[in-house]
Image 1 (tube, each protein chain N blue to C red):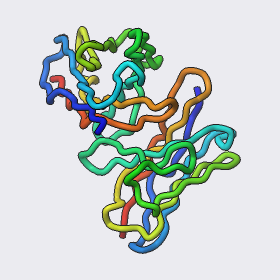
Image 2 (cartoon, rainbow over the protein chains, first blue to last red):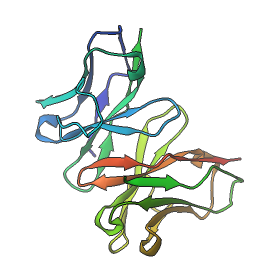
Image 3 (cartoon, each protein chain N blue to C red):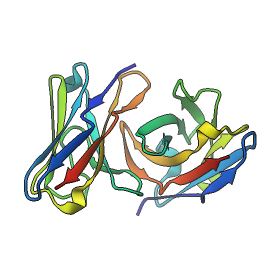
Length: 107
Length: 116
């Protein structure tokens, strides 16, 4: 089955940009979706189809996808952005695959 | 506003059965697949399976095939996740989520299952 990789953790200072990567074989040929999960809460969709933002998600959240890496960028990071972030793809057959997650810490 | 509201936390003993629910509202239940996702303490998200509420076609991830049963009741717009014999390793948070083609756009609040 298709495997996604993510760095376990990313640390970023307030006001800076956090970049969270998601790796996979030719992931650029797939659509990547991103979820934010704050402690004790359910996941929330923040980016879908690589770059689209659901209503209510700040413009500070953006996505890109090319080659073997998809990236979720959070600009002007705030303390409230501290969370686990998961990427997800449809593997093209019958499986929805999640990455292992990246913990974002705001310094 | 689309809502998925899950049943409350459960504490069970090994070997017992359990059925948890995910009640949906404010959209056409039959038009969107529902997924169940497991999250063990301190771990990531694992897709257990998905179901088409239109015809109750359920598909399970290999790790969960034969371990759980996913079902729906269209008349009350509710999805269910069921175990016939719980094990301690089933202790986890369980989320239902609405599948919007290839991604999960709305999630339930989660149901914590503790098995001793």
